[in-house]
Image (cartoon, rainbow over all chains, first blue to last red; front, side, top):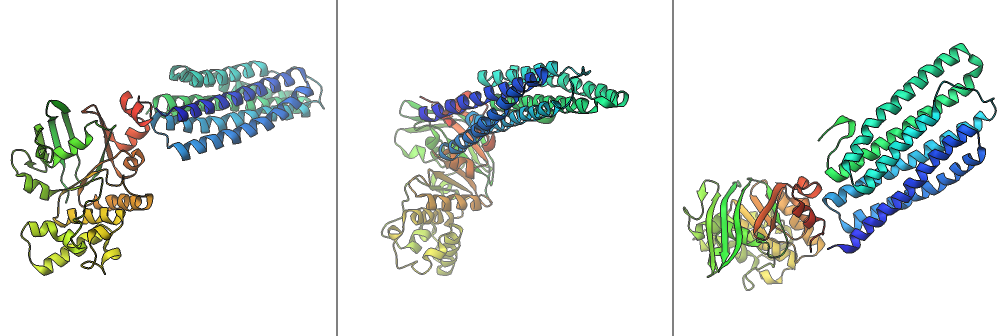
Length: 219
Length: 252
């Protein structure tokens, strides 16, 4: 039994989950900052990004060490590859949160208006996808991961309808253009978060089943 | 050129110990095939059944069919003929210690009655070149004994000796396990070169080595062939849980 090696794999998983928690919290805070126009939450998001970036480097180094020193095979090799990719996706989720926070800061210069886009609902769906993808990762459950893939369409649809509604608003009420454009960008950020959740779910399926389901492949 | 080896329902015993149980597989020609598994799993016994070495043990017994190319080696060929067609290299290099390098390589041919000096010279040079040893020993062919070479060179000498009789198959039982990393790399490069001309079967405990040199890999456990598949499949996504447990170190 390679007990020491398998303990190291457990450590790697644990570190990734800590990072995942931070990325998920960053998105929630950024969206809450948008909802209530709270700049102190934006500061928290920016600060947490520094930690997320540091975690990303630490996890990559741990994974690199394991690849170099332990020559993992089969499911262990797939696990480490999945961790490296999930790590990158979580870091990007953190970047999306920072991007939303930047929009919230810029929006401070403009009056709050009621826009035809449900950002909190999009955020809730995207966050649910991230949570479910991570649940699949924690439980090594390819079924749960597969269910995440089907959720992505809903977020894409909300993003499309946001684009349509906000474009119309800009045409009809051009004085709301800055607020509409910022909201459009935030919707786009959330759609990207959902894409990252999809990537994570695909990586879990690859780890657990050895199957590559990216780009609608089913091998 | 190498030939395919077709094994059907092969069973082997040491006394009452049933060490190989109903092994069937097809080893493709001109490929390297690796056999892995824990100690005592039967992989070395299996290889020894491929050139009828198992039966040299007084308590060894074999049933089943092994076809090397078109020949059923247990029904249609003598052990001597088989061992000319199927070369073997062992874990510890075993050159004839008192013979010169030249005589070591020529020994198989001489045993088969070759005496023509010119032909022997040609075969010795060709075999040593194939074994990637020629440049290191060409000036000492008759001056130095096989035992005077380094471990890695001795192993390549043994490979040259096996190649000299122009076999179709090369069996290698942990050929690099007693060698340093540089010598191991030379043996692995050699395997890669040789498989264009020979069918190679290599038993190894080093899974990275199997992954590096072999197109196909078989996993043995408790005398049974658990899984046989393309090497990349075995090492990235094996079908059988026992294979996965073994290669990921979850056994025991």
